[in-house]
Image 1: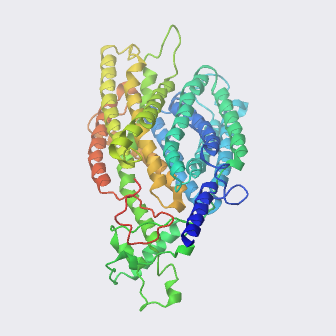
Image 2: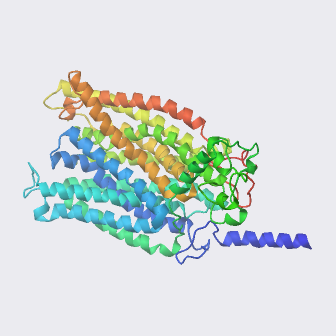
Image 3: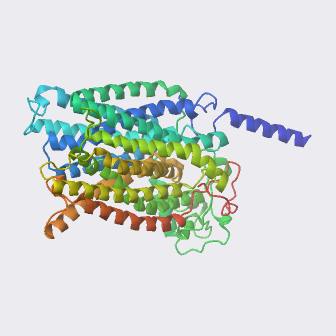
Amino acid sequence: MEMEQIKKAESVEIDDEQKWVCDSSVDHKGRVPLRGSTGVWKASLFIIVIEFSERLSYFGLATSLIIYLTKVIHQDLKTAAKSVNYWSGVTTLMPLLGGFLADAYFGRFSTVLISTTVYLLGLLLLTMSRVVPSLKPCDSDLCHEPRKVHEAIFFLAIYLISIGTGGHKPSLESFGADQFDDDHPSEKKKKMSFFNWWNFGLCCGLLLGVTLIVYVQDRISWAMADLILTLVMASSLVIFIAGRPFYRYRKATGSPLTPMLQVLVAAIRKRNLHLPSNPSHLHEIPKSETSQRRLLCHTKKLKFLDKAAILDDKQYSIEQQQNPWKLASVTKVEELKLVINTIPIWLTTIPFGICVAQAATFFIKQGVTLNRKIVHNFEIPPASIFALAAFGMIISVTIYEKILVPVLRRATGNERGISILQRIGIGMIFSVSTMIVAALVERKRLNIVNKNPLEGSASMSVFWLAPQFLIIGIGDGFTLVGLQEYFYDQVPDSMRSLGIALYLSVIGAANFISSLLITIVDHITEKGGKSWFGKDLNSSRLDYFYWLLATITAVNLCVYVFVARNYSYKNVHGRKTIAVADCDDREAVA
């Protein structure tokens, strides 16, 4: 009789788990979400729409920025490349602040609303700088020297867009991933596909941005392109708000950095104590308090931090033991370990980001010097060649999702097919190939210039650049998508927006380092007789610079392999598992 009651109770519990989402999220009215009417793809589609709009705007501006700076603002090649890198760097580092504020104070949905509004203001200001007569570069179509007020408004507008991106990017992507329950088998599998389809939507926005928007900029006017981007962004914001009843929300939990500092202080306080031989003797959160957070398994690395979880009744009273600055749980210790473990991965992926940075600067500028005619008198805008990178990414993401994952899942037994870090490493191999191909193509272009100084490289087709764009796009499909998944999945649950910001900061830091590298190389080579970076491409030696990047990336790849092989993945308890000692041998979340 008792067994029947137990089975009946377990059946009711399973039914409740299928009906309700019990992962600490709430619906738009603050209640426990109903699984059938909230989250998953029905909510994610609204979110992907606004991401499409943002990427349309970003790439419509970013890929043609160097052309605008050189043709309208009249900056030289070196200054324009550094200006683009600085803007891209700020745009991709601002999410660190936006992600922190989303996790700690505002929540992800509110942060997306606020930041998208700021983004929209930037687009409006950019449109005004090209429409309002007193703010236009000059009164005529050809500007020999733009008005200072135009420069000021132009840079203010694009940096407002940077600030908007700072809150939008980390909050929106993590908000999208929050629509899937990690503890529900079906939803967990869909979540693995989410990052692939997220990037598919991203690439569609990129593709239209570097074709349609760039074409409008080149053939109609910059003002018309800005007006289109402003209207699309405003429309997508309305669509995003319309999806509010279908979303699952996570409440802001306060600063995620404070618990980590508490662990460090507690570990230093207990530095002279000896660790127990059995990790189950370390302090963990009681079962009654685990409904709002997932417990992490104890790991054997960074043992010094484990001292923060030592229960020392002789040294502290019960009241003192409850002080988080003197005693931390195993889960809080493991969360700090997770953050520390991400640092080597973050550092070793920066050279990949430096390679990606070249696609929006020097690759585009190369396209300006080549023959861009396709048929008859139709000439594609130079920035539109960037569309090939989007094609490469779409192809790699689609093949990976539909062909490689099912095959590799059967071959390896890993539900992801391959581990996240293996996916990132494969993309880094493509980045080395990109720089080698780019160096060879640029060498060919310079040879043509040397043979025909007057004609230059106008006889060389722009599609010679296709291989390097396609290869870097394929690499993005592995590394960038892998980094998104890694920094969302492998950070503490309380800082997932900040995790996405860490992924974006890889590209941001890479842009700044790329600018610094240009400055250093320019200074060194100028002392040697002739700088690698001249007034224009024909007087530069970009092929040497590409070979340098290929070498740096290849050496870094070896370091990355070493780091990845020694990496310990996040190890999470099941909801009903609370014993600390049982976890060391469990399979990690890879």
